[in-house]
Length: 429
Image (cartoon, rainbow, N blue to C red; front, side, top):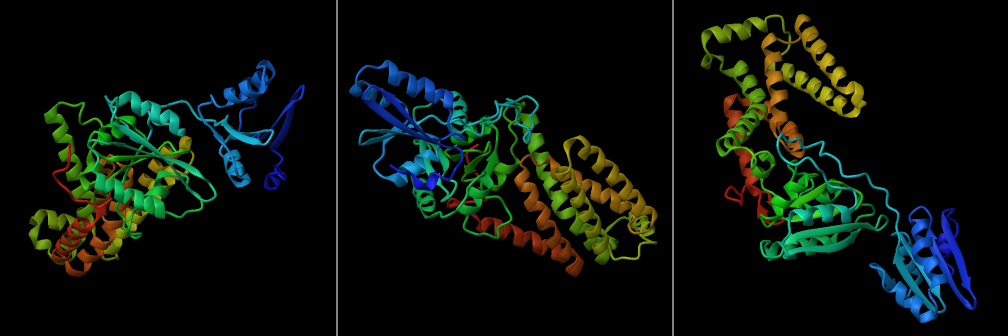
């Protein structure tokens, strides 16, 4: 076996080991395999075990081993962290990979007060271990898939065979068979490949790094996708209301949990419709406000040379810039830089007469309320949808906002996640 396609790699190792008349040749990539494991589990036993057949039986005792018939398969195995053993005319592949992975740490993106703090791992086997320790049911099925022509990414699909809808499984298997991608590295990429509409702004799958959320969704009959190299799991089919549930809710007292859920929907209404309603009321129907409040807003906008819609779009774009800056900047300075930047920007714009004082309150309420929603992927969709609503409010007033709200609800009702309605209200809790 020549393996010519690998000869130019400096980390490719071809190693011949002899013991009397017996010879084995090892082929592997040093960057992917653990050489200490190779010495301890292959080379040392080769010298210690008497007899040719006994050593072959020992190789077959590995947890992950396979006989290889073609050189193409051997190359694929090598790039998956396998060591190829050439013994006489037989070729064997054993998994002795060396995958560096961080230890299980705290979930940083989905903070909770009383729930578990641990997160998933970039290694599928470790994540599966964590999940099985929390969901000890014999009907939990784990299926392996490989996606990506170049990356050969390992994908594991988990589901409860008794609770999961078999029609959804068939629908999913058909989708996975038809996926063609060069490189797959994250849960977000997989979500884009699974959804039908490429222009849909709303997330049709949940992404999470919390094992407790994974287990909760498994118990509701949903499917979990674990991707090698990513600590984020993909959950589906998802409904719109799943994105407003925190893992603190089951821990809190029932009344407290319901209160916080209600608070999140109020925050959704504020961040989604408040800017558009502000523009609609100021531009077309200020008479619906109390006289004192209408005069207060009018007085704060005396020096503002722009219409209300351009004023609020300008400030919302500034808030978007600050939000993106807080993500891209180094963590040591991001919070202080964005806080100081926001204060200076708002005060300077108000003193310069570019915006009214009431506008600062509106933007602050809109910016804060979106962070009450626990799932970050929903934030991005809401941030996009706000702008068409503002445009409708500026063109047609309150009627335009109402038309936009009905159009948004109709669009959400038309969405499907793995064939299930996105606005399914009476889903499993």
